[in-house]
Length: 605
Ligand code: ATP
Ligand code: MG
Image 1 (cartoon, helix red, strand yellow):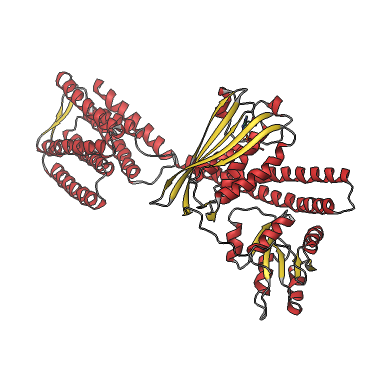
Image 2: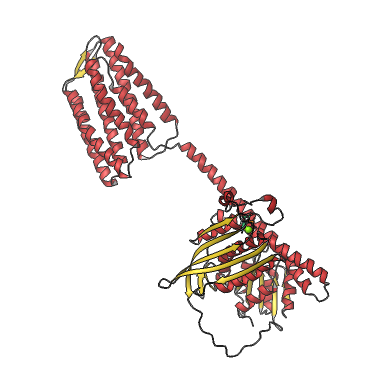
């Protein structure tokens, strides 16, 4: 009975493997399906191997052992067919050919099986050995010997199908080597039956190479990912609503402070405080804006909106505005543009300005004295009407240590905390800048000497709208005076304080103001009165500004200009409101100058 150990071991491996495979929640791809049948037939094969041995040794019945051996050979052929089907499946041939080949081989195996069952079998039982021979055995061998080289061909095809990929061939090569080794062993020790052990070992090795992801784990991961996505979405929603909530009261603070500053009765000492209130509110606004931006970038909601703009004008205005931040520091700020800079570009003006603004405010913040040079050079591709801007911001400030450069673009990372503690900031500016630059197809680099200064260089592709400034003939120049005396405006806002701020601004521009605290009020008012202009707040309870506008614009004699008023500084908002029919869009908080700008833009006269 010494020869039973290997078939016995094979049976144990097969039982173990069957449990292992079926206890797991398996995926349902073609590969796993074939493997499933391999596991089942391998178990049957190992069982028949042991059964034949036990029957032969205990009962010595050649007839019953012969029947078992016939089935044993049948199962062996089915296993080799399954191995071939597996090799065909992974070899990357066209699905149509794959189907035909699989059918042909299945029919061929059926014929072999028919021969095995029909032909006589020679069972050899000696004291130690159980062997098989005869025509049925030769038929079985025809099946095996035909398939081995075919399997090899498909595996070789698989190896070269996606680069050099050999992982899934390992079990087959293990099988081949063990088979040859088994044959040699059998010659010298005929009592050792190796086949079932070799196949079981093959199926065991294969278990580790098939694409059989743990379905349960994937499901759990999917659930966890969905939850994380939901939490992330909730975070973004929270941030955007928080930003809205903060912007609304800030609107009142900025608006009323500006008004008070202009009041001739306001004492000088108070004017200074008021200007501090405005600048602190603006800083707060920037922080809120930054947090909103980073959350938008992280949730892939940041959009790039292209418009025609004059780069030189926009950046000059921006630099002028930023230069007020220098305060009484001894810094010389120069702004320089290449002479071949195109007159008008097409690009995301708002974000280009945001990028330059972040670099410039950093330079101002982190430079105590010396100079800041903002330079823009460009390489124009006139044939394709594109240009690459090279925006350089150089300062003679504190510089950045080499080891800190890699941390610079990480969000919430601020360097030299002790030194920075007196400088405002959240550490988001450069993280946002880098993301924006990359979203627009550019890149950002820097070079810095600690203690001496820093140079940031942004490379930014933009389209060219107009290459050189068209010649302008001025016939008559009038000094423009803004006065909207005699015009009526309806201010629609659910927040009384906001109405108060807007009213002051509009009254100072000469408008006669009416107010509505809800969409319904606005609808009623517009039914009986005509207003030259309507300032429509968007976020209102019960009826949004958009809904209200939809209704009032259906009125037969409606021809008011309507400006959407909102605390959401969402990129793309401008386009959205315009497409809904609003003439303009203004984000709160707004200044008198912002309002004049918008009125000019819509040709309000
Ligand atoms: P925020 O821009 O969000 O208001 P912040 O300016 O601290 O805050 P970043 O603009 O991301 O954040 O800059 C990150 C850090 O890099 C800064 O805290 C500062 O230490 C350093 N840094 C940035 N620009 C310069 C510069 N021109 N010179 C020296 N250090 C700089
Ligand atoms: Mg900054």
